[in-house]
Each structure stands twice: as structure tokens, then as C-alpha cells.
Image (cartoon, one colour):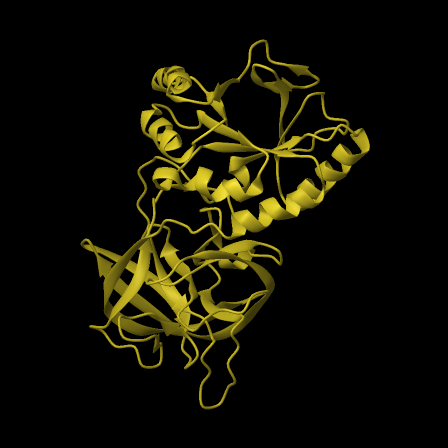
Length: 346
């Protein structure tokens, strides 16, 4: 989910309701908030607070706002009011838009005009508009301010975010070698959702390329289907979270939102329900993409399958020469977040 791109605006006229909204939003993992007044509860570590003003949003530093709006608010009801926003974004000025008419094509215009990252905000009171705002021209607005006047609206925002499809760069990679790798700690990821046979999660030894491991929605001759499960691989492998960050399989905990999907279908967010780490025999699988070798360590078992063009293939049957699916990502990572730096993972 893209929680980091949402600002929850506490918009109820009742302070008690705003406190209830804030409490629920915190439990759901939101960390960016705004209100007309300073927060009634002390900000928690990692939170960012803004004060809403008629002219925009001022970031709160301690108990005081910054001197000028961090983000200037524009009201756009027609083409004539769009031009100043385009000019501001071209100059790299952070700008927020409250729409009063058509919004799809104008928003695409603003996304294209933006010259600096994290400068385009939109304001809405409708959670149903979040997918369109975050998806325009693939990236969408950097931040969506959602005005929340009822506690239940927090749940609606979360559901909309979980339904957002991720933009993934799928690639086919030929397998060059499959060799025994001894015994290691492998991680099973049990989710709180039922997965389709073609769905799975993405794992790999290097963040630059993650392999698609299919779910256990198809059983074997000796096991029943477990459509909530993915036998994901060795403890050190990266996996992709729903918000685009990577995390080591061994660091996943119940409640984490991870990305599941398939090369020919949409991606979605599911929650981790349980993690099982056990000692099992592993295989080292090496693939080659753009003259680089990328590895993944998976359990040697009939229920562990890599996705191919034809059907998922069990690691017990995988042979050099097979072509499997995976995803390319920015290689540079700091605590799972993509960063622009040169990195060599082997």
C-alpha cells in the first residue's frame, strides 16, 4: 500500500471524533496528518504533521508551524485556473490542487509538468478518487490529502489503497544452473488471503531482480492445496512489499502488507498472517539477465514452483535452460527504500 503518499486530514468539527480518527489511522499505519489546529495528541516518532490553512499546508516543527506554506493550495475549476499550477510545478514549487470540475486530463497535465519530486498534491474528501489520483500517467500525484470526518472513512482509504495495482517491470530470465545448496532456513509466508494458482510473491538474493514464486493453490500427490501459502525461500532473500519497499523474508511479521501478483495479471496487496521458518534442503538457482547472474535459494520440494510461460515448474523438476518470470527493480536500497546510488550485489 502507498500509505506514505496519503495525508489524513482530521476534518470533523468535533475534537473527540478527530481523536478517534487519529487513533484508528495510527493503528492502520498512516504517518502523515493535517488539521486546522495543532494535533491534540503528541506526535509519535516517524509522524509528519501539517497545519491546514486557507492558503495551503504548513509543516509543524514542534508546536509551531513553519513561516510560509510548505505546499500552496490552488482551486482549479477550469483551464484558466490550471495554468498557474503548471507554472508553479515547472518551477519546482510544491503545489496542492482542490478540483472543482474535470480532473483526469488536468491531473495528467500536472504530472507531466512537475519538475521536482514530491511537489504535486491533490485534496479530496472521497476515498473512491484515490486510485485515479495515484495512477495518473502511472505515477500520479505525489501526495493525496484525504479529508476524513468519520472514523469509518479510514477503513475505506485502506481498502482503496490495497486495491491499487502496482506497476511492475516483468521480464523472462533463462535458468543457467540448478545446484544443491545444503540445508538452510527457509521461510513460508502464510497470508490472510486466498491466492490464485498463478499468483505468487517476488523474491531474490539481489533487489535488482526478484523471481516469481507461485502460491501453493495447487497441491501435490501427497499434499492438499494451501492457497493462502507461498513457500518463499531462504531467510536472506528480499521480497517486495505492497508499498514498493523490499524486506528480508526473515524480517516479515504478521500484519505486513506484501505484494502478490502474476506476470499476466494485476498485482494486489495481501497481509502476512504467519511466518514459518524451518531447516530444509535448498537449491541454488542461477538465472542470467542482461549479462548478469541473479540467484535465488529455494526449498527443494514439489510444492515450490517458479513461474514459466507454460505453467509453474517445481524446483524438483527445474532444469537449466528453462525460462522463468521475474521483476526488475532499482538495485540501490536503504532499509528497503529505493535510493539513487550505484550498488553491486552478488
